[in-house]
Image (tube, rainbow over all chains, first blue to last red):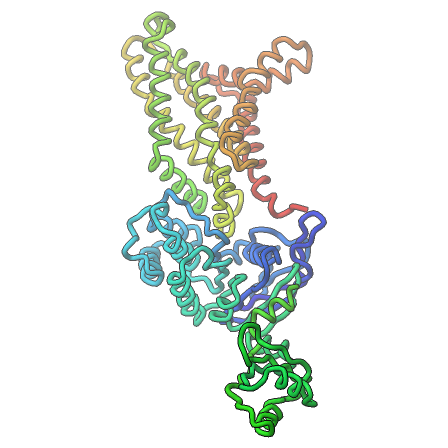
Length: 307
Length: 241
């Protein structure tokens, strides 16, 4: 089941929350929407799930459009909204049964589907409780269970790990990864490591537009450009700094604050200065203690794109 | 119909799981019981086997109770955000509204059924006009349905249950009292229109045991208008700007 988003725009008054976004998501992809708060991630999700209509543009799921067949699309999507709103006064099992019935799961299959979801989401010990008796982590699992109860082809999860503790985050991520093996998953987050850990593909959204699209590796290499080295040389720092800066391939040298003898060396575009630094040390009889290539972190890519 | 009934069942379960249903039914029985049997205008005092006393009390007590039932129906979902989960499942906005409407109506019907012992007792006391009793109950049901649909609309435009309650009462009092009073004091065509809008005129004619199409049209229009407006408020998220 592929999702085709065409020129989607959503205006709130004068402000454009989503501004002419287009992309395609293929079956089985796990895609992460990444962006600062208020970038338009949730709005895009709300439009895909037919919660609100766009001001213009269209979303198609295998040919059916959100404008003409919302019922059909809603059936194929499992949705976990931001903040995970649930009917707190209901017992877990009743709530899952209600979700299954509303989503049109065949009556005879409902008990087995509920059992499966309880297993998959690790709700077995809590299954007789009311939802308001559950901790946040377990509520999130109920949210996931209700989203998957009708075995949808597409799962849309809006910030699925906010407010969870580190252990719960790891568990939920693992669950999402497992689900992603069979289904198309879209999740949103403003936590980079999360998107990097769970998604095949990342869409960075800023101010209602897509500013980057690709795997975490391609995004990194796109923005990398220049080589960055971290070097530790045991010698008089001032001499070292001026000598390294004298090399033809080096563009910038900065001392690492608070660390004696450490430098960040930035090479000129498309050049490497590893060998030259080594030769320089040999010539001056300095000890080269360490030299590491710095990978551009996704954080840097993100900041660069969304500033 | 299937989807509507699923919504109705969930709402009913939530009425009966919380104390709402029991408190309302008990209060309703208590209030109507006191006035029918104990207060100064009771059946013994009138000396006739009639349920008119009960019907006129229920006419007012339902007017107050129904906004208390309907106030949370949509307002609470708006506040908690559960409306987003509900509307993104495979149900239409109209199914959601009608499901909630039906749940409220069933709760009121249960309360009315619980008053059947009053009828049985009174019918033992003398000759009771069965047609008037059936008419009275039908009248109460139609009146309740109208106020439920007004209450749902009030609930759909806010996130605050108290606002929903007061608004439902404010709109309700127009039909309950104000149109009637105005209709009696204003002459001519306007007065007639106002009288036609008054709930009590139609309720009284039905509870005499006469079912007139004018009355049915009146109740049906309020019900349809209220549910349509609630549905529009639910769909509003689609046409904001």
